Image (cartoon, rainbow, N blue to C red; front, side, top):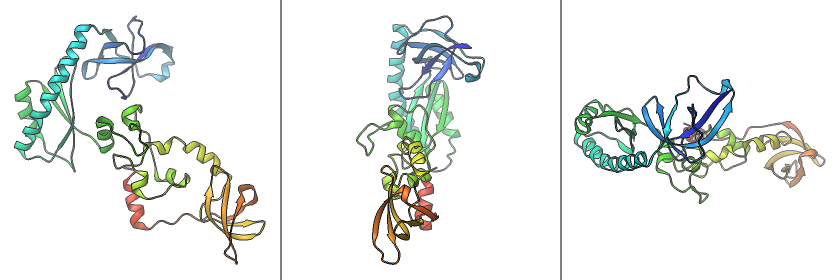
Length: 286
C-alpha cells in the first residue's frame, strides 16, 4: 500500500496522485507540487489515504508544501497576466494570418512557461508564431490544439437540460459515448437532439446506459418480428422502463400493447437509418 493525496489543477479537471511527503492535507487545501511541467499550484481533491500499489504509476512526485498566502497572490497575478496574454496572442495570430481560435491561456505557477490552447480546422503551421510569442513573453511557449469537447469543458455553458455542462461542472475525464447508446435508450436519432454544446454526443447518454442494457435483455427491439398471444406482428414501439411493447398484428394491422413476458421474438430486425443520417450520426462520436 502507498499513501497518496489527489490533486486537481482545474475546478473539474482530472485528479492526479502525489506523495504527501509527510504532510497531512484536507480536501480544499491548496498545495505546491512538482509535475512534469514544473512546479504547479493545485487543490486537494482526495485527502491522505492509502491505495494499492497497482493503482499508481511510480515513482509519485511529491507535494512540495502547503500553499501560503504569497503563493495564492502569485496565482492571482498569473491570472492577470493570462488576460493580457489573450490580447497579445490574438494580435499576433492576426499579424501572421493564421486561422486559429484561442480558447485558454495558462501560466505555470513559477511563470516559466505560457501555454496557449486553441482550436482550428485542420493542422496549423505556427512555427513563426511561436518564435514571435517567445520574443514577446521571453519565456517558454507551448501551443496546443484541442478538440471541440475540450473547448466546451474549458469555456463552460448551459446544456439543453438547463444545468451547467457536465464536462465543465464535475466530469474529470470524458467518457466514451456511442450512437448505440442512443438506440438502446430509444432516443430520437436526430443529431440536433442528442448532441451537446460541443456538437458531439451528449455525455449524459452514458449515465443510464447500464440500466437500459439490463432492461433490454428481456425486451424485443423496435421493428422486431414477434409472436404474441393474439398472433404474429411487428414491434412498433418499446417502453423499456415499463417493460411493454406495442405490436402491429397481422393481418389486421391493429396495434396492441403487450408485456415483454408475453412476446416471443421470431426475428430481431435492426432499426433502419438512411446512409446520410448515419454518416452525420457517426460524426457525433468523434
